[in-house]
Every structure is written in C-alpha cells, then in structure tokens.
Amino acid sequence: MKSVFLESHNLKNRAGGLGTFNYELIKAMAALPHPELDIYLNLKDPEALKAEFGNAFKYNKYSSLQRHSLFRLRKKYDVWHSLNQNTKIEPGSKPGKYVLTVHDVNFMEEGSPEASAKNAKVFKDKLQRADVITYISEFAKKQAHRYFTIPDVKEVVIYNGNPISTLLDVSGYTPAITANKPFLYSLGDFIARKNFLSIVKMMEHIEDYILIISGNNDKAYGEEIKKYITEHKLQDKIFLTGKVDEVTKQYYLSNCAAFVFPSIREGFGLPPIEAMKFGKPVFLSDKTSLPEIGGEAAFYWNNFDPEYMKNFLLKELGNFNNNPTLYLEKIKARADFFTWEKAALAYMELYT
View 1 (tube, rainbow, N blue to C red):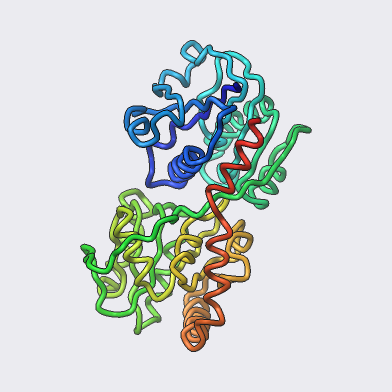
View 2 (view 1 turned 45 degrees about the vertical axis):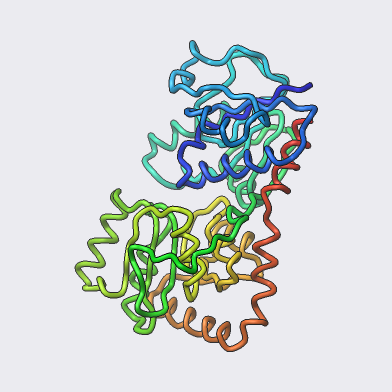
C-alpha cells in the first residue's frame, strides 16, 4: 500500500480557481477505486470532507504553523503531491517521490519585483524537490520554461476537468439581479489580469444587450470597475453580482446570450468550458492558454479596442444565432473533452 499526501489546504477557498481544482480533483479521486493507495488530505476542516467522502481518504488537519520548518509533518510518505506552485507547506521528511503541479507562474509578470522574487524562490525550491512536474496546460509548461531552469525530470501535461458535471434545475430560480434584455455574462475574481474593464468599455457601444459579471469585486480592481461604471453612467447596462453560489452561476450560464472572458493571463481558464457545457457561444482573448483550452469551439478577440470588440462580438453572435446547430456540436464536445475523472486517473497513475 502506497501512502500519498495531497497538500490540499487551498481547498478552503472554493470560490477561486485553486480551491475548485483541489475540490474537483479530490471528488473525482473519491469516486474511483484506489485499493493500492492510501491518500491523505490536508484540510482546515477535515470533518466536513470526511462527512462527504468518508473512508475514501485519510484526513490530516491543516494548520498555518505547517508553513514553518519546525512544524512540518514528519511522517514519511511514498508520494507528496504539492497541488499548486504557491503553497508554502512542505514535507518535514523527504518523501519517496515529490510531485509538483504548476498552474501558472504569473507572479513573474505581475506585482512588485520584491513579490516576484519571493514567489520565485518558493517555486525554485519546489522545482529542486520535484521528481515529477505536472502542468495544467501546454501554455503553463511553456511559461515555466520561459522564466525558470526546469530540472531534468518527468514532465506531464494533465488538463483540468470541467467543474460543471451536474446540470441543476434552475427553471424556477430567480436571482437577485435579473435582466430585462438579453445579457452577456462573465465570471471571475476582479483582478487586473481578468481584464474586465475591456468588456465594460465595450458595453458603452452596445445597446441591445446588458452585461452581468459575477465574482469577488471588493478589492482595488473591483473598485476601479465600479468607478468607471458610475462615471460613464453605465448602471443600466452593467451589473455586478459579487460572488455567487452554484445555483446562481448555473442560472446565469444557462440563460446568457454569450459568455465573455477577455482575460490576458490564464494557466487554464475554467469559466469558458463551464459556459460551453450549456452550449453557449464563448468569446475569449487570444492570450496565453485560452486558445488551447477553447480550441475551435470559441471566438477570439485579438485586441481590446472597444469598437472592434463590439463589432466582432455582434458579427459572430449573429452567425451563431442564425445557425446554432453549426456550432453547438463543437461547443459541447469541447466542454465534455475536459473531465475530472480523466485528470484523477492520470494523477493516480503517476502515484502508482
């Protein structure tokens, strides 16, 4: 029996990409037989996950003290899997094998030089420990190689799955913010790399649709967006919902005219494939990993001039609406290509 430790404490933030990755991967592993593996989870609230997954895993209680060398876990595991490149939790004794999953190294392209240097040191230390490095996209792999000397170890790209595996019945649901016109929808944390301001500016030139954006908007970039909406009198065109639960998210995804996601930095980008699950036309930037993930099933802006974005969106949305069957098969096939079961099987094969 091999012991596998998943450094999974980021699961506590289910509203973010890392929390979603941790939860969905763990859920998929729980559904798969793994009699040859004892898989340990590291969690702030192990009882909640134990109630959900029972004996599928063993459970370790996470404490922030584990960040410090004196309080590291001393048990020797056959495999230690660091589920993202940023976590500061490391093993207290050398495991049999160390697996590192890299989502992105965006810290090399944003933030202060001091913060970048600090994160780069954490990442370099992880690279030196790694026996296997996995990446969530080919782009993430190329980005890591661009900025760092990667050791001569096994490297594997394992795509994320689609977070929407179950379609909820939202037919009788009414969200707090409702639309009196067809609406465009977007989703994500309000941070500069999501580039929401570009679609806000685009809406100044669009009359037949409104825009709804969900996500945590109480930080600096969110305040910038709110200020722009107010100053340009766009309150009747653009609506910010804040963070939403699964029912609300699926309501908006299932009822929107299109999903718009102009992000300029993504290691993978989960929201576009969530929207594709509902057969929605998806408009993305042509930056970083998004063309890799959207494939031929999405439409791509190649710049962020508001007039160009409007014209491109209305033209392609018109093409979609005039002949949806031409697009729907491609869109749904792309959504279903990404599964957490496929990802979990690939990781567990690495462990064994």
